[in-house]
Image (tube, rainbow, N blue to C red; front, side, top):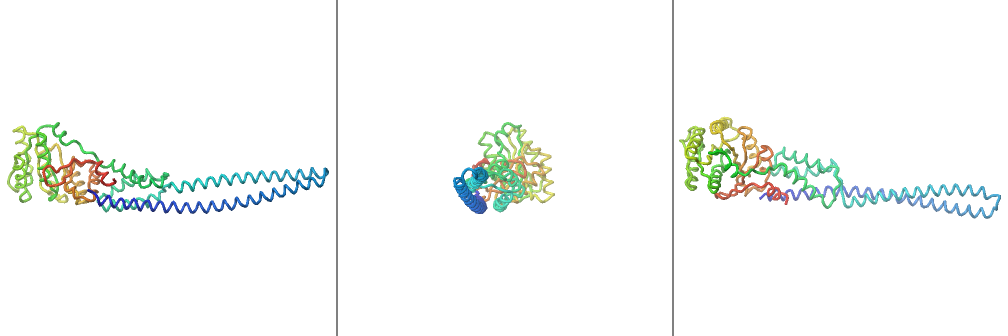
Length: 389
């Protein structure tokens, strides 16, 4: 799962390391030139020191030759030479300190690098392209950039640890974005009876099959359900739900095609109340999220059924369109959670990250196949690990 995104990120991390190493090597060459100049300056000082020592030696020799009357004059001359020697020694000490600083910088340049804002922009360009290509929404990319920028700019990082630092910054931000789901079964079992759940999503998302999987899960947890065939719009939708109901041994409440979906939901809740059932699962029409009339019909179901939980079912593989679906449905009805179908064939993974972020609601389950047991609890840690390793 998510192998495509994982490999793309791996390539981006490699490019990032090359970019930073190239900049560090350029800085290292500048330091080498600076050290060369200091060496030249040191040589000049040492030559000057030799000249002064020669002058001092000559002056001492001359003192001996001119006897007492000239000694005082020569002593003054030697005193001046000593001052020059002291100045030379001070200059040598300063050069030693400069060299020490340059050597320290060179050592640091070989082993560490400091990320400037310009460096970060170049680094993140590599990540941004990969993330957008893999269905990560623009606002998520901007959030990642903001958090990583705060964490990395002006920090000194060991060059050999650069890739892991970028990964860790990305991992920490993803952890803050991707929400851990609530315990679905516990929430229902501790809620009122009947607990009403409405499912939404466009045609082809696997919504009806997902409802059957949820019914199977609840039945395994000793909860009695009824299915509401409130999709009176799509041909064969009622028969499809009835087929699942027959396999699972769960009753389906239905009306005729073209009937009011809200009325079907109402009757299903009434039926569950009369028979002391635990859960009502409402299948709604596969509404196209851009069609206002169908969205209004969905809003009516919400007003009538007053569901305790509203779940969006979306395909992981449709990428950014799934993100837009989640955004629109959440704005219209306020979804409580998301189930992503076909996640077993999703190579990109961006949709699951983005849907979490744009709705602020968790992904509860991942659909991993057509069988009733192929419904997996969403694990944010597993998602992040599958992307970053």
